[in-house]
Image (cartoon, rainbow, N blue to C red; front, side):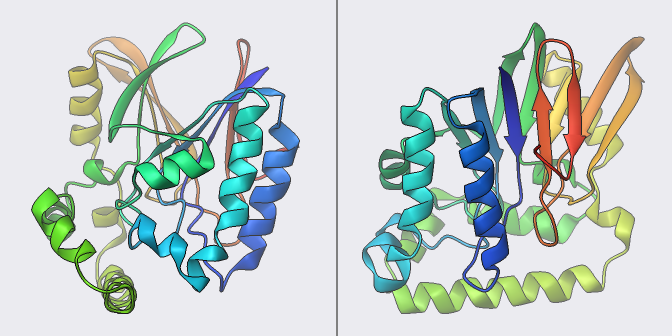
Length: 244
């Protein structure tokens, strides 16, 4: 039995291969995993749970059903919000039999206390993004967005995505990466020496020394061209583009 972590799937109709890969992965782990953690940006964007009641939203239901089948086989599924799907809420969780987690969570990973998060909070050099993030996570702002019609929200989400892509193209690569000072601060605040996150789309395992002790940061990759899977059991930790 193992615990799995994935992140940054960015599922959308225009990229059906990622959805098919998710179905294959869920079939692979069903009944054979202790837990599955999805660390944000499961979807390219999420405009509110009421989207599920629209014809377009109905296309997402097979994904929710696949999650539910895994959960009913005894594998709990935990989801954190990302910077694209921060409006995921309780209706989604109920229909998919998943559990929404706070943006930072400490888990006991086979005896190793581990901090898990999406990772965007660590990118402190991207000042423009951090300011926008404060707005997006504001409950009053979210209620204003959810009060708009679904077509208006769809247009707004697509506009934000385009702005994000254009902005990223004009910024230096290191600005978009996690800041080491922020990483160390997060570990100290959580009082742990292991961190798992996504968001940066730079899969790697980083080992360093924190306050005289060995520390580790595992970064999950995105699913734009292939998968990215972290499998952890009592003996091993493996980060791979394949789940087999």
